[in-house]
Image 1 (cartoon, rainbow, N blue to C red):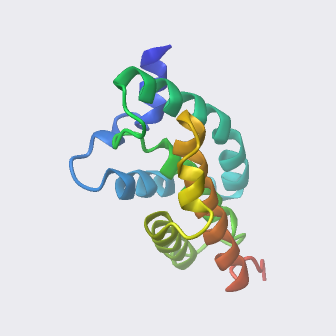
Image 2 (cartoon, one colour):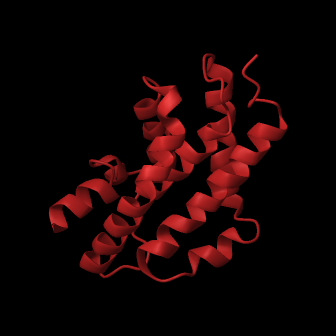
Length: 148
């Protein structure tokens, strides 16, 4: 189970990227979602609990509060950001969602920084979930939710 947790937590090794693993993890989320954009909201919802579990187990095994190589939280947050755009048939909403998610994930406006302080995998993942929600809301407000 530890190997499975590490695989998921590092998003199949993407988290071991030496520079900018969070950004690379967010990009990997785009690549994974690109073939089936209509599934993005379901991917996001379905991944939250496994991400929390994997992040928690991996953090515990490495004796670290928030290991840098854990990027499944970025994957989940990025998918939530993409869920704010219901028409993903052009590259623009993908790039805007990517930029917005990274902005909120780095900036950490309230309550993102507070969520980061929650224990274990919950704290590792929920701050990125909130960053994704903020990005999705901005996408929605910008009109990227209009199907027409």
